[in-house]
Length: 242
Image (cartoon, rainbow, N blue to C red):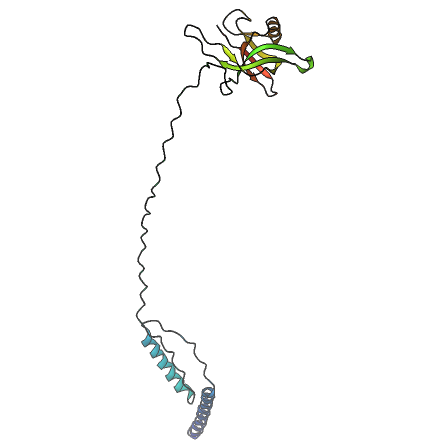
Protein backbone atom coordinates (compact mmCIF):
# COMPACT_ATOMS: atom_id res chain seq x y z
CA UNK A 1 0.00 0.00 0.00
CA UNK A 2 2.74 2.42 0.94
CA UNK A 3 4.65 1.53 -2.27
CA UNK A 4 1.67 2.31 -4.43
CA UNK A 5 1.30 5.66 -2.69
CA UNK A 6 4.95 6.59 -3.22
CA UNK A 7 5.20 5.68 -6.95
CA UNK A 8 3.33 8.79 -8.18
CA UNK A 9 5.57 10.98 -6.00
CA UNK A 10 8.77 9.42 -7.42
CA UNK A 11 7.56 9.78 -11.01
CA UNK A 12 6.72 13.44 -10.38
CA UNK A 13 10.19 14.15 -8.96
CA UNK A 14 11.90 12.33 -11.87
CA UNK A 15 9.92 14.32 -14.43
CA UNK A 16 10.88 17.60 -12.71
CA UNK A 17 14.56 16.65 -12.68
CA UNK A 18 14.51 15.68 -16.39
CA UNK A 19 12.87 19.00 -17.26
CA UNK A 20 15.55 20.88 -15.34
CA UNK A 21 18.34 18.99 -17.16
CA UNK A 22 16.78 19.68 -20.60
CA UNK A 23 16.39 23.37 -19.75
CA UNK A 24 20.10 23.64 -18.79
CA UNK A 25 21.22 21.95 -21.99
CA UNK A 26 19.16 24.33 -24.14
CA UNK A 27 20.66 27.38 -22.39
CA UNK A 28 24.20 26.04 -22.86
CA UNK A 29 23.60 25.48 -26.61
CA UNK A 30 22.23 28.99 -27.02
CA UNK A 31 25.32 30.47 -25.38
CA UNK A 32 27.63 28.45 -27.58
CA UNK A 33 25.67 29.41 -30.73
CA UNK A 34 25.83 33.14 -29.89
CA UNK A 35 29.65 33.22 -29.84
CA UNK A 36 31.50 34.09 -33.13
CA UNK A 37 32.88 30.91 -34.72
CA UNK A 38 36.61 30.76 -35.34
CA UNK A 39 37.56 30.94 -39.03
CA UNK A 40 39.21 27.69 -40.08
CA UNK A 41 42.68 27.91 -41.58
CA UNK A 42 42.67 27.81 -45.34
CA UNK A 43 43.80 24.49 -46.61
CA UNK A 44 44.41 23.20 -50.05
CA UNK A 45 43.03 19.80 -50.72
CA UNK A 46 45.29 17.35 -52.44
CA UNK A 47 44.32 16.35 -56.00
CA UNK A 48 41.70 13.66 -55.98
CA UNK A 49 40.39 14.46 -52.43
CA UNK A 50 37.76 17.06 -53.37
CA UNK A 51 34.97 14.63 -52.61
CA UNK A 52 36.37 13.78 -49.21
CA UNK A 53 36.75 17.47 -48.34
CA UNK A 54 33.15 18.14 -49.42
CA UNK A 55 31.83 15.32 -47.28
CA UNK A 56 33.85 16.46 -44.29
CA UNK A 57 32.54 20.01 -44.77
CA UNK A 58 28.95 18.81 -44.95
CA UNK A 59 29.34 16.72 -41.84
CA UNK A 60 30.91 19.62 -39.97
CA UNK A 61 28.07 21.97 -41.00
CA UNK A 62 25.48 19.48 -39.99
CA UNK A 63 27.06 18.93 -36.61
CA UNK A 64 27.32 22.66 -35.96
CA UNK A 65 23.71 23.28 -36.96
CA UNK A 66 22.47 20.48 -34.79
CA UNK A 67 24.32 21.50 -31.65
CA UNK A 68 24.47 25.28 -32.06
CA UNK A 69 20.92 26.04 -32.87
CA UNK A 70 21.01 29.72 -33.84
CA UNK A 71 24.81 29.92 -34.51
CA UNK A 72 26.37 30.91 -37.84
CA UNK A 73 27.41 27.77 -39.83
CA UNK A 74 31.14 27.42 -40.52
CA UNK A 75 31.99 27.58 -44.25
CA UNK A 76 33.69 24.49 -45.61
CA UNK A 77 37.20 25.06 -47.03
CA UNK A 78 37.27 25.33 -50.79
CA UNK A 79 39.52 22.76 -52.43
CA UNK A 80 41.89 24.04 -55.05
CA UNK A 81 40.86 22.93 -58.50
CA UNK A 82 42.87 20.08 -59.81
CA UNK A 83 44.49 21.17 -63.08
CA UNK A 84 46.72 19.38 -65.53
CA UNK A 85 50.44 19.69 -64.56
CA UNK A 86 52.30 22.26 -66.59
CA UNK A 87 54.93 20.60 -68.75
CA UNK A 88 58.47 21.96 -68.33
CA UNK A 89 59.80 23.72 -71.47
CA UNK A 90 62.01 21.51 -73.54
CA UNK A 91 65.50 22.96 -74.00
CA UNK A 92 67.39 21.76 -77.00
CA UNK A 93 70.99 20.77 -76.12
CA UNK A 94 73.60 23.16 -77.47
CA UNK A 95 76.15 21.33 -79.56
CA UNK A 96 79.50 23.16 -79.54
CA UNK A 97 81.07 23.01 -82.95
CA UNK A 98 84.83 22.43 -82.98
CA UNK A 99 86.84 25.54 -83.70
CA UNK A 100 88.41 25.67 -87.07
CA UNK A 101 92.15 24.99 -86.87
CA UNK A 102 94.28 28.08 -87.12
CA UNK A 103 96.44 28.32 -90.13
CA UNK A 104 99.95 29.10 -88.97
CA UNK A 105 102.47 30.78 -91.14
CA UNK A 106 105.25 28.49 -92.26
CA UNK A 107 108.41 28.96 -90.24
CA UNK A 108 111.22 29.95 -92.54
CA UNK A 109 114.13 27.58 -92.54
CA UNK A 110 117.18 28.97 -90.75
CA UNK A 111 119.79 30.33 -93.02
CA UNK A 112 122.79 28.03 -93.25
CA UNK A 113 125.85 29.33 -91.51
CA UNK A 114 128.72 30.28 -93.64
CA UNK A 115 131.07 27.36 -94.03
CA UNK A 116 133.87 29.47 -95.44
CA UNK A 117 136.95 28.92 -93.27
CA UNK A 118 138.57 31.86 -91.57
CA UNK A 119 141.74 33.05 -93.22
CA UNK A 120 144.59 30.82 -92.08
CA UNK A 121 147.26 33.32 -92.97
CA UNK A 122 147.83 36.84 -94.23
CA UNK A 123 149.80 37.96 -97.29
CA UNK A 124 150.43 41.48 -96.02
CA UNK A 125 150.41 43.47 -92.81
CA UNK A 126 147.46 42.15 -90.79
CA UNK A 127 144.55 44.42 -89.99
CA UNK A 128 142.74 44.63 -86.67
CA UNK A 129 140.39 41.77 -87.62
CA UNK A 130 143.33 39.52 -88.51
CA UNK A 131 145.24 39.89 -85.24
CA UNK A 132 145.30 36.76 -83.09
CA UNK A 133 144.12 37.86 -79.61
CA UNK A 134 145.78 34.92 -77.80
CA UNK A 135 149.28 35.11 -79.29
CA UNK A 136 152.07 37.67 -79.44
CA UNK A 137 155.77 37.95 -80.24
CA UNK A 138 158.03 38.44 -77.22
CA UNK A 139 160.91 40.93 -77.52
CA UNK A 140 162.11 41.88 -74.04
CA UNK A 141 161.36 41.43 -70.34
CA UNK A 142 161.44 44.31 -67.87
CA UNK A 143 161.85 43.44 -64.23
CA UNK A 144 159.74 45.31 -61.69
CA UNK A 145 159.95 45.81 -57.93
CA UNK A 146 160.03 42.45 -56.22
CA UNK A 147 157.08 43.36 -54.02
CA UNK A 148 154.76 43.28 -57.04
CA UNK A 149 155.54 39.65 -57.80
CA UNK A 150 155.40 40.42 -61.51
CA UNK A 151 157.54 41.35 -64.52
CA UNK A 152 156.61 43.17 -67.73
CA UNK A 153 156.72 41.44 -71.11
CA UNK A 154 157.38 43.77 -74.04
CA UNK A 155 155.38 42.27 -76.93
CA UNK A 156 153.74 42.96 -80.30
CA UNK A 157 150.55 41.30 -81.57
CA UNK A 158 150.13 40.00 -85.09
CA UNK A 159 148.98 37.10 -87.29
CA UNK A 160 150.55 34.20 -89.12
CA UNK A 161 151.67 34.93 -92.67
CA UNK A 162 151.34 32.56 -95.61
CA UNK A 163 154.47 30.55 -96.31
CA UNK A 164 155.75 29.27 -99.61
CA UNK A 165 154.76 25.89 -100.97
CA UNK A 166 158.11 24.30 -100.04
CA UNK A 167 158.21 25.73 -96.48
CA UNK A 168 156.92 24.27 -93.22
CA UNK A 169 154.88 27.38 -92.46
CA UNK A 170 154.79 31.14 -92.66
CA UNK A 171 156.30 33.69 -90.28
CA UNK A 172 154.45 35.51 -87.53
CA UNK A 173 153.72 38.97 -88.97
CA UNK A 174 153.49 41.65 -86.29
CA UNK A 175 151.55 44.88 -86.47
CA UNK A 176 151.05 47.95 -84.30
CA UNK A 177 153.26 49.29 -81.57
CA UNK A 178 154.89 47.50 -78.68
CA UNK A 179 152.80 46.90 -75.57
CA UNK A 180 153.59 45.68 -72.07
CA UNK A 181 151.82 42.82 -70.33
CA UNK A 182 152.41 41.81 -66.72
CA UNK A 183 153.55 38.23 -66.13
CA UNK A 184 153.02 36.69 -62.70
CA UNK A 185 156.33 35.32 -61.39
CA UNK A 186 154.50 32.12 -60.34
CA UNK A 187 153.01 31.63 -63.82
CA UNK A 188 152.98 28.30 -65.65
CA UNK A 189 155.57 28.65 -68.45
CA UNK A 190 156.63 26.17 -71.13
CA UNK A 191 159.26 26.53 -73.85
CA UNK A 192 160.54 24.63 -76.85
CA UNK A 193 163.34 25.11 -79.39
CA UNK A 194 165.44 27.30 -79.23
CA UNK A 195 165.05 27.99 -75.50
CA UNK A 196 165.29 24.26 -74.70
CA UNK A 197 166.41 21.36 -76.87
CA UNK A 198 163.63 19.49 -78.59
CA UNK A 199 160.40 20.20 -80.46
CA UNK A 200 158.02 19.52 -77.55
CA UNK A 201 157.14 22.05 -74.86
CA UNK A 202 158.90 21.67 -71.53
CA UNK A 203 158.10 23.36 -68.22
CA UNK A 204 160.59 26.08 -67.23
CA UNK A 205 160.67 28.75 -64.55
CA UNK A 206 160.00 32.44 -65.06
CA UNK A 207 163.61 33.29 -64.15
CA UNK A 208 164.93 30.86 -66.77
CA UNK A 209 162.78 32.61 -69.38
CA UNK A 210 164.06 36.02 -68.23
CA UNK A 211 167.68 34.87 -68.55
CA UNK A 212 167.22 33.53 -72.06
CA UNK A 213 165.36 36.63 -73.33
CA UNK A 214 167.98 38.92 -71.80
CA UNK A 215 170.66 36.96 -73.71
CA UNK A 216 168.66 37.03 -76.95
CA UNK A 217 166.80 40.37 -77.11
CA UNK A 218 164.32 41.10 -79.89
CA UNK A 219 164.12 37.43 -80.86
CA UNK A 220 160.38 37.73 -81.50
CA UNK A 221 159.55 34.22 -80.30
CA UNK A 222 155.80 33.58 -80.44
CA UNK A 223 153.94 32.67 -77.27
CA UNK A 224 150.31 31.77 -76.52
CA UNK A 225 149.03 33.25 -73.24
CA UNK A 226 146.12 33.22 -70.77
CA UNK A 227 145.37 35.89 -68.16
CA UNK A 228 144.01 35.51 -64.62
CA UNK A 229 141.49 37.45 -62.61
CA UNK A 230 144.03 40.16 -61.84
CA UNK A 231 144.70 40.79 -65.54
CA UNK A 232 148.25 39.43 -65.38
CA UNK A 233 149.41 36.49 -67.51
CA UNK A 234 149.26 33.23 -65.54
CA UNK A 235 149.97 30.81 -68.39
CA UNK A 236 152.59 31.27 -71.13
CA UNK A 237 153.42 28.61 -73.74
CA UNK A 238 155.89 28.96 -76.60
CA UNK A 239 154.58 28.11 -80.09
CA UNK A 240 157.02 25.87 -81.95
CA UNK A 241 158.21 27.28 -85.30
CA UNK A 242 160.38 25.21 -87.71
